[in-house]
Length: 492
Image 1 (cartoon, rainbow, N blue to C red):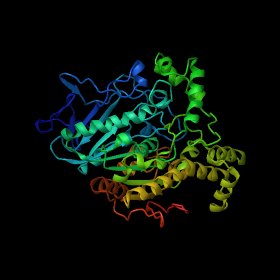
Image 2: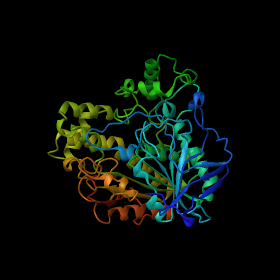
Image 3: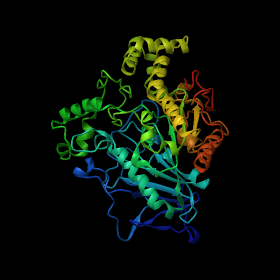
Image 4: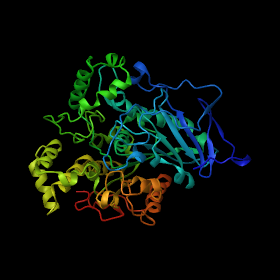
């Protein structure tokens, strides 16, 4: 949106506890970009807990986007995923920042929504076009989008370093929200944290984290997993491979001497590691060498965190696995051998699991079955487990959804794939950059009213804890369906 000027639209300046920040006021409200919530993670600090930002003198420029966490380029074949991944790595030390989009930096005490981006724990940032907060500001909500450490600095398990440093960053950002969001017109007592994909898995982990108590009131988990963490044994396999590729000892001290460019250069050596152990399968099906590292999955540890007092909205898309197959042509080229290989990564008894999928989808091709296996293992099973666990502990504060609108991208084959719900949540589905045969939503226009319905439900949930339908009951598992028929066996 072009910047507007004039006496009534002069650049606003907000006084935060760390210093003053200048933003931009336009027709959608006020935007403050690259506002630090923690000190820059440099050198050995890349493997330390997030530290308080020292603050600044004068007025910090918050009118321009800032640096992003070090990350590799991602290629999804024929599908344009740049609105999702953003610009990639934009070098700069001060990247532990948030972007704030608010109707006005006043004493409005508005609902606050804090978004945690996805990207497989190795990519993504608040600069992605999909995360534009204009619709939330329009609806009198303050949107905060968070950058956090990724890849080796964020999630590699190292001796001498705290585990899950990317998660610690999100906790620090939520603490910043508690201390600071009131000056941006938000209510620190009404915070909803929401995330998608890896960001949704991080959001689920917050529900089981004692340090998260009191930091938020509600949570939304979009296509994440309550059982997507690596065990310590699995994580050590990744650590050993990374150390071997870099030629150093697997310690924080040794890794702190290595530049970020080398961390990115060795990522291909970590692809495809065998993470199946005697106690666990690979929860990410080989798609990423990084995840949370936990002795107990978040869905099994909700009593340890704030989950009982938090309202939860949770769901998945009906064809999640299509994102990992259709853009590369693998939906058509998958063989029975490919299918069995994927099933063996995620199931201790792959033959039985495949028999169950075949029974639910008679006549399905190997590619369609592979997509179903991926979707179930990566997202649906862990979502169901999290929904059931939260419903038991929270007493009727869980709401389930299913997103089924089929994108017409790539000749109509992309379907209700992973990420397709995001333009509807952010109410950007009519944006031209999402359309065309290689755009995320394809050449067809978005269905009339679907974005308003989904975005409206998210805003209503953030405001009141109720998205507009009945709470989830594990005894009668029914989801609110958006844009299509819900999958058979939902909630089983």
